[in-house]
Image (cartoon, rainbow over all chains, first blue to last red; front, side, top):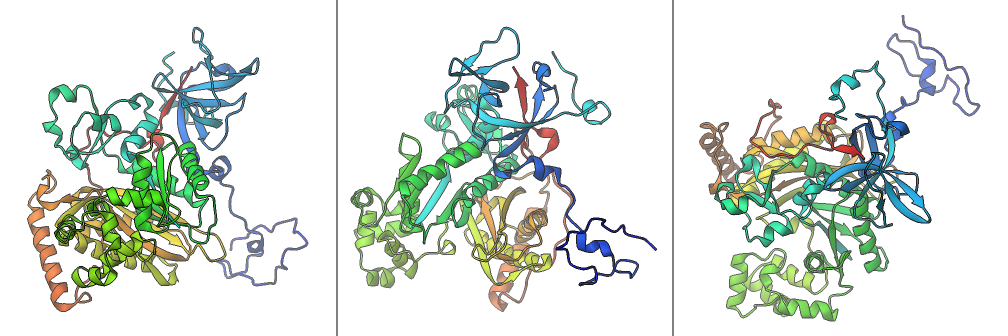
Length: 154
Length: 419
């Protein structure tokens, strides 16, 4: 016979276990049924607006100092309005690129991390903006994720 | 009021979203099996390469300055669903009309229509990244014309509002417009109208209802009424047979279980297949749309997905097999009120490209479908119906220049470069 653990802290408003008991596989009613909740869904946590959320892979290690590594999974929500300090995906030189939005002397710039690249002035309604990155998911060496990515070219 | 919202050069725009280097480049999208050009960017149109041209007939000097892409319905379908989701958050009722167009039923809303249109266009552009245009008018027929007018505007957002049927700019527009341009008026109907001296849309809407009913049909009389601002056509009444076919129906009772929905879907596939064969057309892609009742309390659910057919087909069994696979992906435990099947990229049947996978099958399928249609015609529609279909092994098709499925496969995600 299987036992189902009983939830310990029952809120006062919860129905008494005797209400509408359901039979478990053993034929016994499971007292935990009344407290069952949906399991945590990481996707729903990270993707608040499915219509405007896209995933990308980060290529290159230039932003490593900011905790953005080659191969990280980027979660981009196009519905977010960009603000200074945000990390953006922008179309630069025909390429989807990751840069940080910065404010300097009350003007906005797209700031690269790589040496030798110029900062680019940025307008509020800039055509080059693709979306704001809201999460970067980084795999640690213990996961299989790392090996699936080609080694960093830089 | 109704609105028609339409994605500008939809397939090309989808390709460009994840490949910004294609911006400004003449871009063409190819049919299944890369046979011919089915969609063009503005730059491609400017080169005077016609729609439908077989890929191998494009002149070599042009070939060097254009980019061709295989059609990627997985990507287009996902982006199409996103556009609908963004719109559905802002308006009560939305009816997809094809993969890149949908009607919004704005009845009961009282808005600054110009502002609403601009908001809708901006939200799709910002949240999904696709340019759209919108036409808003008292009837679906007028909304479709208004949308066409919006597309000619150079300034963004492309919004055209005709608040009433007697708006002076609308009257002027209809006086210049051939009846052929009106939703549901085909080539033959247009010729017959011309024979009676009806050569503009304005003349069509001034023709008395009784004349149109007597000499043509109730549907044309309704079209004229729609041009006069009286909404009397539903989505099912009119389709543009050359581009897409739509079979949808609301259920008397909400349907919850998958088996009943699968049955309804088989029914729609039968009808869609019959329509295709009646018009001697075949389809390249199929979409399934389903929704719960938007006016009921509780959570509203709607979903729409598209899939490419292995090769252009008018075979009911093929259509149904693809549709059932889509249903399996879409279905959630909800009380569905409406289910529809859409077919798109229709081509005349004789232009069929044979593929390695066809083998001797087309002739047999053709004969089977012919027998099918004649049995149903002679003994009634219930005499022969489509039973459950086994799901076949996935097929492979020729798409040499297909872009990645950027939004639906983990191993095909777009790459963003750190700078």
